[in-house]
Length: 327
Image (tube, rainbow, N blue to C red; front, side):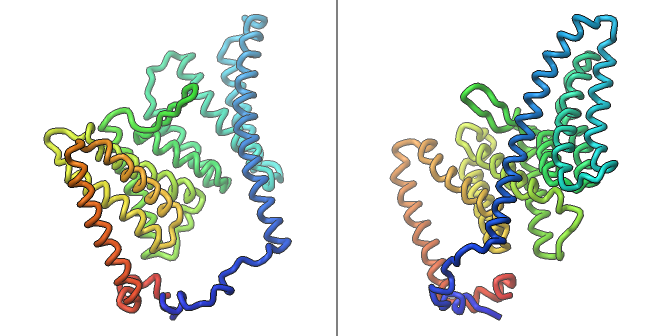
């Protein structure tokens, strides 16, 4: 059993980085090419859909006798062929090139179907459909990119949204109801990850969705808490101080769970939102209250510093409450 003090006594030379081996360099190259592959797939698919859509309009002018439903059916057939290709042909090493375009094409075709058949807009139903279809395909083909997309579609179904406009991105929620629903979903995902790490050796069924869960779960939850703690979002029935304590506690728990359980994504999200929270608060407080805030911050920093000092001086005491660090 290695204690914190023993780890601290390890000579500095032991912790220095060594030269990368050929295998490590090759692994890094594979990772980088995978990133480029995802970029190429997304850009290529969007560009193809845009160009193909314009071509369809021209073809419709020529082949007016052919019902639009035929083109719609052809699109679904192409999507199905792309999604089924990895199961029919031996292309396991390049299945991503078929699955991602097929899944994106399917998402676009669902919107086209709704427009052609004049269906009432229902974003939650649309994203729920994508969650089910993409989730089934991700699990069947064990495709991590589709697994991440499944979690994103689920969070969109719960109310989280990203709107892209020229020179601007809008990230948030449509209203307080959707914010509560999406934030609650993010909290449940974060709690599931923590309980899995504490009480199980790992749930293999979640592996394909794990990257999306690790990032989007804590992110959506933290974003909802940051917005709720904003001065202009708090109603008369709510306590400003109570909301600040809840938000601060949420970010602190994400940081603590991420650090102690070695969940790096959760630690990064919690730290990032804690910084945003601290930077935002002075803008919400009236000028005459800044002195009180400064004294409060000074007192808080002293308490935190004292706790850190005591922890570093008494590692044996801390270990009995943090079994993971004692392993």
